[in-house]
Image (cartoon, rainbow, N blue to C red; front, side, top):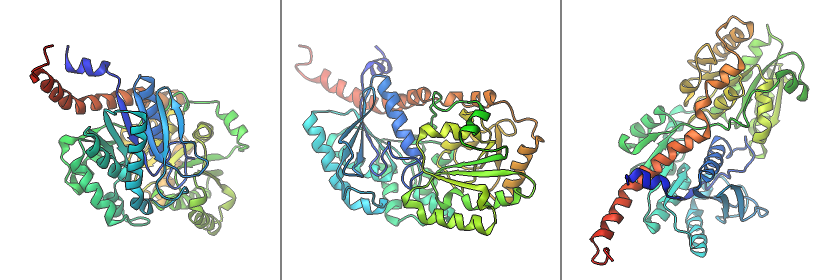
Length: 427
């Protein structure tokens, strides 16, 4: 029987690590964004396919349940690492060894023997490298963002040298790297000297059952919106997201259009940045046209996407651009800077626009074109949704399983060779 068929029939046991960010956290918080959605949805889809997935994250609150079911054969396991509260990512580093030891203790008590480790972000990668040395199984990593690239962009707080050094070690020590885009692959090679042969490109996915077109007037009615044009921003409140430029854009547009900007994202850990942006809104005299909704559950987002006339991604840097994918799945056009994977998502002039940069006037001109109807190429909601149908989580999980199997194959062959060469193997 071919190796790939044997592997496809075998139930895999996967230890998935998301140390600093809980996959069930509220979206838009400082450390809860696209990566949390990615980990949760991938784990659920792998579980639906019959594989066992244990996602390990840190206890953020004493009330956290030790084990939470994510879906069929997929569960979330909380481990102690430092104080049981939200702490800064860099402050978490000294507690990674505690996390790894507690993970091993849980594994020993359960008697679980994993086939591979899939870690997300550099902190998880550090833990993944440690337990891989103990378990002797493959380690696959997805960084989601890269510290060296964020420093090169030069917006917001700089990333610590420690992070850069660990990311460089991980790119050369893990068995396989999953990159969301070709740009990320190129950045891994350029900044960290990663071998292109160890990198596989698999994009992010979208839950097409949750994110789908709705009746737009009804969605607007439920949100108590008037007849104005709705510009939507969804994401973390972070300087890298370019929200400041979007506020200036709205100020420019408001001279000729009746519109409202909705900002979905935020939380306790971003209060100072939200306050700064609200202050800018007042200076621009558009504070009555801007609504900061704070962090939201993913279940609430489809109604927002459907109520909007356009979703704008004005970021300086994105690892992929999950918000653009969710908006398009709801049939709402997107205007985005050329970041992450938007060029693989947006069909220029049909499902939205990709702009060269996030200069306010550039964004304003592009949004105005969309509003005015001069962009006759912008298609129907059903067409926009259909353009991203291939990004369903079933397809993403299938691609990921193929990489799991390819990574495991050399080890399985070595084990089979060892068994057949043993004197008692024929008994």
